[in-house]
Image (cartoon, rainbow, N blue to C red; front, side, top):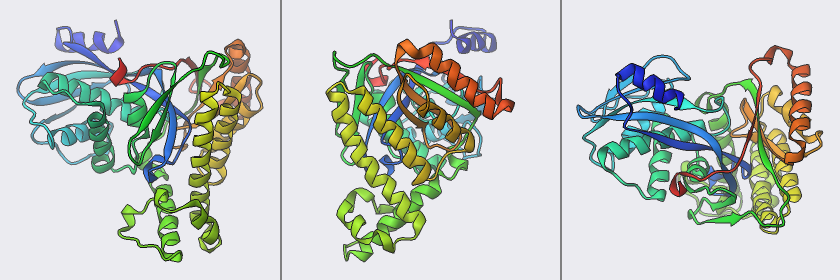
Length: 391
């Protein structure tokens, strides 16, 4: 029995009706691309968010988290404005779903995350798991793309984070032993099977010990800097352009960026440099996976991490050191920051035969640099998993 089920039973003196689950995700190549209609590659993993829940016929939503204090409560027809706490993601999910579907039944539940928070899209996972619960008690069935769209609406337009659809897509569409290759412009995707000739791999999650919040980080600023660069490129090249919020790097050819990049302020140029080079890495990475070349895929993931540090300019010192240690460790094919790169964790694709030595070396070197994080830093070895649509 999951811990959230035990807490639910103690709290409500009954067993939950069911348990909703959404996996976390990793994005080895394709970071900071989806919000400007780029392409990504990603995997759902076998850890995530569980919610033990039951229906409440009075329309009240009552949720508790094993990771955060205080129970949150609101009514399905009177969703309050965001308050800046952990439950904003759930309020946003209620708000977004109610815009498109009539809700009559509330829900009570207990949320449990199976890994430390930060870098694995736990925000998208908790939204998706909660939407699953809220839909079930109301008899609503959402198609995969509708589920992705509602979750995206909740995080971007209620919580206020300038996300794309990378996180939601990986967690909904992912499939065990397949790489998701997604075009965020038209939502076309391919699930590329792991070829029989590919060397075995496992997914290592190195949690830095630092929790993060996208809403409170420089994430939105970086997206705005990229969009400002794109807007300027459209003007320099004489292209038609409209509202600032509608400017997307996908609509400006790489040749235009190269022709006018020296006219851009340095921060804007760097953000564009990351976006355009990451697009090329994604395409090359998908081809590497298709032919079973995990070493090349891993190399591109390391390159993606380098660009995130130097061009996107993300990463706390702790994360940057973790990334450097990973690059120096035998048995790691590749890896990078997981998520936006503002604290949180790093992910790596590793050779399973090196699991013990990889864990030992990365831990030793990291805690040598940051001894005060002993007890907070942790390592988790995971595998690919099915997303919600394939469970």
